Image 1 (tube, rainbow, N blue to C red):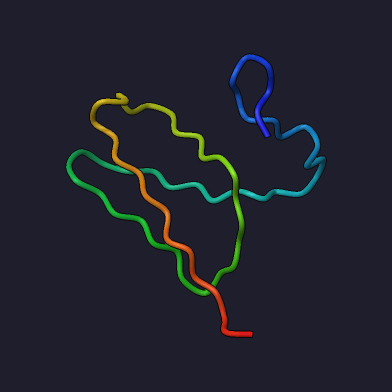
Image 2: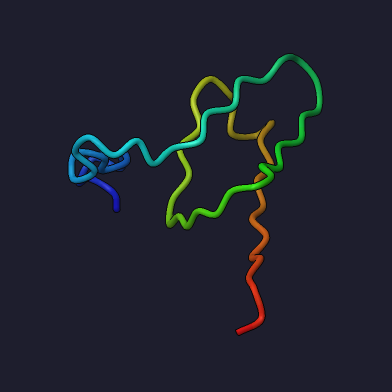
Length: 64
């Protein structure tokens, strides 16, 4: 969820470290985690200009 100021609300996670951190270098980057399962509602990005940022999410799931 988001706080009133628009920042990510992580206080409710307490000691759970539900995050994936990716540190990029200059140029075009691609990040695709493997061997993991996670759900998310919002993504936080620091240190990048909004006009230079393109994000997309792909839903993957098992057939149940």
